[in-house]
Length: 144
Image (cartoon, rainbow, N blue to C red; front, side, top):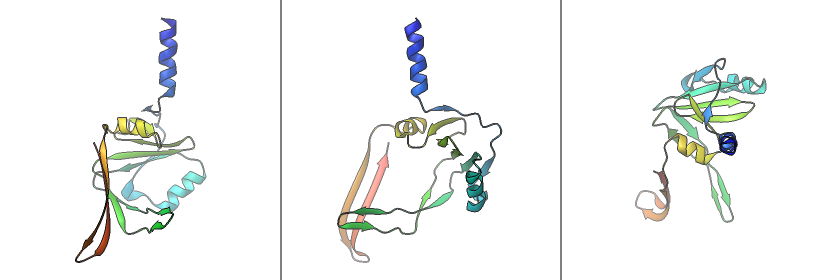
C-alpha cells in the first residue's frame, strides 16, 4: 500500500497537466491585448492570462534556414477554431482549452492530451507548377 502511494505521488509530480491557482490573475481578451502593456507586465514579473476566442486570428512569422534553402516570412495568420487560454508567469507559459486545466508550453504530449489530439496525422510537402504562380512548394500538416 505504501509503495502504491509513493508511486502515485511520483507520477503526479511528473505530470505537467493540472489546475493552476489563478484567483488573483487578470485575464485579457486577445482583442484587448496591447503589446506594450503586456510587455511591461512581463518585465515586472506579473502573471496574466490571455483568452483567445474561437475565430480570433494572430499573425504568424515562420522562418526556416537550412543548407541551400531559406523560407522567408509572409503574411500568414493562424485562425483559432476553439477558445484557448494562455497563462504567462515567472514559472513559464501554460495553455488550456477551458481555463481550468493547464499544460506547460513545450510539453507536447501533455498539450496533445489536454486538447484531445490523438495519435497520427499527416505532414506533406509537394512541389509543382501552376499556370498562375509558376513553381510552387506546398506544405500541409494535419493532426487527429
